Image 1 (cartoon, rainbow, N blue to C red):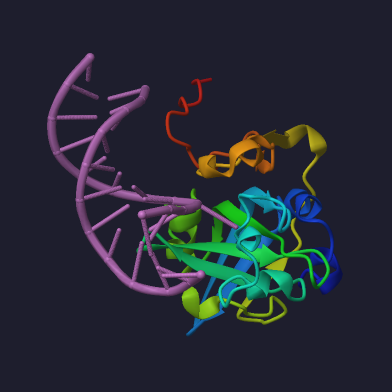
Image 2: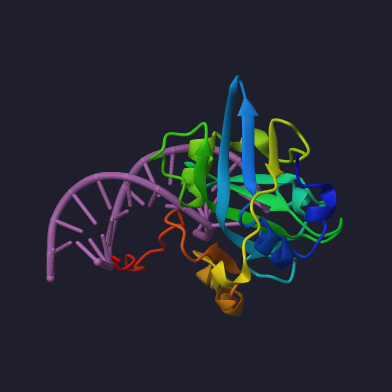
Length: 193
DNA sequence: TCTAGGATGATC
DNA sequence: ATCATCCTAGAT
């Protein structure tokens, strides 16, 4: 049970919305780790100055322009990884960054999986997974419970201030009531019930 | 609760 | 030089 290629072959913003609630599955070396996606960011194309594809085709960004449904993993700040899924049709350089999941299986109950770097560390995702086909049993996404529109919240993407006006586009989507959404700098903690 | 600074290496 | 981050320390 995996999301088919046709799922990814749509605009990044659509995929970012539909990814909420789906399961990210990593199976390697006898273990299987699963997280439910609760936060995503869309990087919509070459014209999007926050998108790595805006740098043009390079060895690193080439995968973004390739067929949909592949992984784009890169190293950031020398120590953390970010996991993306390549979206839209071949030739369009776009992707969706998975920013947070909630532990479902194979992870400690209290594992930190909020934040793109932390979730990659928890699931064991590294540069070795870059360009993988997401139809692979070892790394794929699976359907989950549908997420009603009322639970989806939107806002500006994190950490892309260099992108000028594009930094303000509300391309970050998350589950309103999830306790596992990442905490951007200076975001106040949720009020107690 | 918040801010500042540093770790660390691929990329171009 | 830059960077789609995270953690810790120290101030408040």
